[in-house]
Image 1 (cartoon, helix red, strand yellow):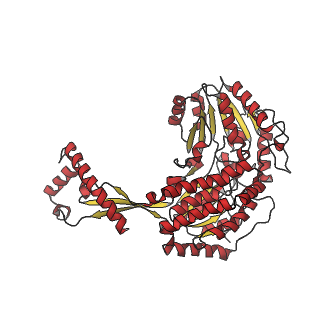
Image 2 (tube, one colour):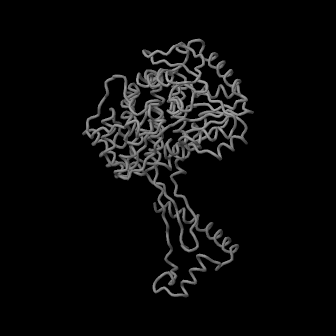
Image 3 (cartoon, helix red, strand yellow):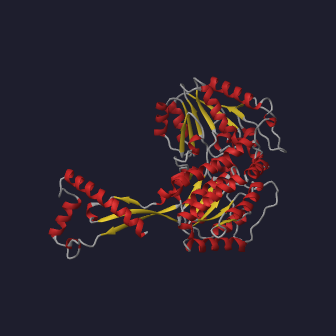
Length: 524
């Protein structure tokens, strides 16, 4: 096994320091995959891809339908496994782990044939006569490294896009969500092509060994510290990566927002999976004019939803003791006003209720580290400008939420950067297959879901067909002053008046596009 590289806290962003050394299960026995089996899975996936089997529409369709069948057949086991790992209510598990995967498969299957078609594009005047097309081809063998917070969803959603693009797959689920890992290792060989789609289990050593191999693409979802290790390993082979990371996702509440609705929508995502979501509202920036109303509404919502003791309500748990202690340390160290909360923290059951903290200092750990839990700092701001300045002072977040008028939201969007934005709601932008999901800067690189995922795991190959019935002698040596002047006129102009040139190109492009597309389809 290769040496496991450790990240020191000073090597990572401040927002990531709490995650640098806690990715481990709670003393549970890890199901290790032997080194020889990892090499064999990699080699078999490469061999199968080279055979061309995964490129056909029929193979892709069969595997995608099998994923859907696997999820529906095993829905009860999935709900039980994820419930055992994260203690989430059944409804949360169904929406996140079963329904979401089926929806992605259905959307992809409805569009896959059209996505696979060569895309005819116009050919510039200088390259005429000819025709051009863009082909979307599979990259090869893709390594998928998954996190523990949505163990089924984030294993299969990425796999759907990777398979749709015609790639072979080696999947490494998280060993921290142990029940889900076991279930995945049982389901996948029963339903999917075992020559092209493989699963390896284990911990850090297995991940390190897998990263030592050469892949055609690596898809990693998780923390920034591990994302850096993935990117360093990928650089050895110049392997492209999709990194879905996290960060501190801000929520801004402005005058004019529907405060009662905002309170419910913010808390619905913050309570989902106990806030253990990369796009969970990490903190709130609230305008001073609506601060009291927002806190009053949020306090009432939590009491209505969770009663006096959230441990007795439909509410999940923290994944393991390491994460419990990390989140508790944020609470213990904060200098903000901790508002009353429902139930006592319990390390044995890994229970932490939603906890709102009013106006912590911007330098305390609660505001410098990604929370990834149910704590919610609320900072009072005097203006929209001060909110923008606060967001721009940190790393670019994976998601940004804005409650208020669309005009104010557009001002904030134009002056900030984030992976995605949702106005007057939370998380909903992520569940649309029509929108790309991904980060920017410290929150990640690349994107997936729907057509965006199909393109992410495809190689966009440029193809031009040049006609042979015309061949201008001026393109060849010897170059003369006359030829140079002709090319200057053609390339810089104006040899042909702009209006006439557009008319010629439009007419020629329309005629050639249809013929070029049909020829491209017949040849490739």
